Image 1 (cartoon, rainbow, N blue to C red):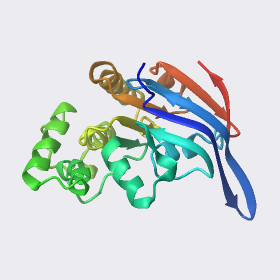
Image 2 (cartoon, rainbow, N blue to C red):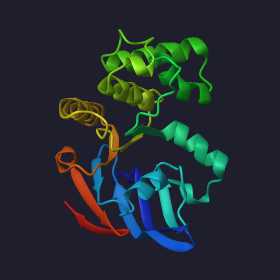
Image 3 (tube, one colour):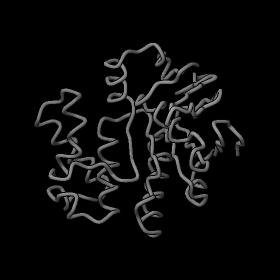
Length: 227
């Protein structure tokens, strides 16, 4: 039997806020298999964003263990975490996080620059990724020349251009209308079903979470329910 793509055990994370200790995660354990589509739900302050940042190697837990593709993330230094993040993880955020004065093509090229890919090859890979998103005619548009749905598709192309093993999507439909939300979720469904991409999605919308094969609910830093 294949090992899980990611495995966390007994994760704890606390923050100081105005001199008060906030327990964001309280002993979370979780495994995600290769090719799985997982949704994480919970109210504001439940710990789901903290968990997402730890899974994405953007933050580290205070205690517990995290393994990604068999690698012990908890033992890595900042440079090792950055290399792992760029190689294995793609991110899609609610606010798109596109560079405002940079074309769609150049935005998608950005992770390949950090990966050391030469200019001609990264231009070709970025173009292919955007064409896959149906944006072949928007390569040179700036973010402010794109609709919300188009901007999110650029963000998804950027997340996928390095061919990561894991896509982390934090409220990816939060800044688009319902029709565009449905289009984005159909795209994520396709990436999971046809490409076998592993997706971990954070959302507060039950209808969005329904697209996932498994759903987790976090409350007050605890894993409360699983469906």
